[in-house]
Image (cartoon, rainbow, N blue to C red; front, top):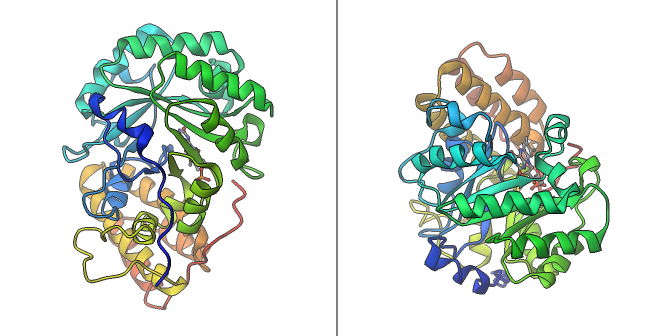
Length: 360
Ligand SMILES: Cc1cc2nc3c(=O)[nH]c(=O)nc-3n(C[C@H](O)[C@H](O)[C@H](O)COP(=O)(O)O)c2cc1C
């Protein structure tokens, strides 16, 4: 039996309880375009320790687009009534769009709203959205204060190291976010130009945590449950956000819970979490089936297949023959064929590696 790991401190989260944010398992599925929709969120939710309270983020939602939309019409805005701890993420900067977007988000009954200050794509930089906001602290402060004033829910911010690698600037920026009313911060410690290349500088997560009094969630390059707990140990962060690896192994939440001595997910009482490469390979197939079951009835056929292909594109990287699975699935002509091809692929035991080289 392994020694239980160290859980993040819940102390800073407690002060948010009176505002409706209840977190006792601070391990979070990251916002990811094309991935963090209701089907992946529900897949991940099924792997949470029983009764665990966490937050689930949507992918970034454009504040220019939301006001004209009907919620639930696109996979990006669909949600389920049982998704009680949702945190939709907004991309934007202008008050009138933010105000109108917040009205739309009521349909999701969010626990909080997150502001994207990390997106590094050219389009975001051009419009002064995403990480571009980190280049102009006064403007970023204005965006946070405005959102806090307009939002019925707590407002958090997800950011990067910044446009440049300047720790003092980052610390000042985070102190500014706190004084502008941010309820918590998620830090992905890479600079904008890195996109997702190189490695995340976890040391900055600890430095930011020391500089502010609100919860700080660390993010970047967590591939296994051991990595997640190592990030907590090394930085003292109040939570860990997992992106790419949570697509590949959404049961990472079960593995983390198990390492912390928490109960298994509902329905898994008789099982231990997948513990080796082949057990993870078979679990990938189960998670894939579950994901397809969730996506198929909720999204229009074309959208569902696109999302399934994208899930495999990102998730299968940890499988020894993941590229072959992706080739098979992405060339299928309908969902029945997608399922059949995956079934054939998994008739042979498949191995997942604990860590892979993440180049994008
Ligand atoms: C396909 C993809 C889409 C992403 N979209 C978003 C997004 O919408 N909002 C956001 O804040 N970060 C986004 N990210 C960044 C992740 O949330 C996360 O910060 C990054 O992947 C590092 O974490 P990881 O190493 O655990 O993947 C995206 C990442 C990927 C791979």
